[in-house]
View (cartoon, rainbow over the protein chains, first blue to last red):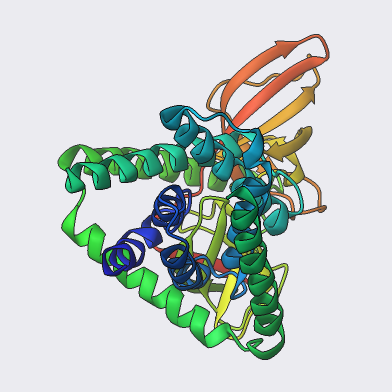
Length: 137
Length: 237
């Protein structure tokens, strides 16, 4: 939690194309740690709201809606673990960014910008998850 | 297992809805928090800039771009002397300087409020057009810069000749479709605002980066010239 908080406070102001708070939350989601997920989700999303100058609770709302939608369509996903993880990461980012762009601008806004956000976020989250995996090993 | 998960996330989602509703009702006075956040972010960015100061190559690049902008200013001044009426100098009499607090990836700029009003024009240190004030709060301003995608306005060349309707496409570029085939446009030509629709006429927007010939005429890609490295913007009162 403290590491994630430091990461957000010191690096989030430098970039607005990455949602740093999503990576640790995704990590807890993939590990099925619901309590940690809720705690981090509330706390980190509030800090992200403040950094992005959004109404308080905005990121909490769209992230929880994303996870709710993902859990609804989870039944349709495959069971191969590695690919499943990648599918989860892709799906969560796709839904999250669609909701973010929709609620922020009322439309997808700009396809190239959307793709840029999607690619940057997915790469960052994969690096974050691999890095955590390496530390654990 | 899946049903339990769906149930959990439904509860979290409902919780977030309640939180958001309460936030919008009870925590409506968020501005001091956001002002603190903007100032804090400025401190963090300055901190990183001090650690990773620019290399010699970057300094030369900056000097090169500064020279290009100086040239743009000189060309405009020359036109002004020739009384082409492109620039009305009285527009520049009431410039107000403001510090930038944050620039986001969508092209929105947050700056200190200096008693600005919505719709005020914003320029950079070289008088290149940055954008327009879109929201004013007690402590800070939100400016829609030309990096925001989808802003449309008329543009002209240095001779004041109308070229077409420009549309911002983010990432520092503007595209102008359906320029008449007989219109003479060259690479690196300076582009100005035209008419008095979204922006008043005569403000430097950018330079021509690419010209595509199409069956309907020409398509011009314009590189925006505004530069916010100084950390300051200028508002026209």
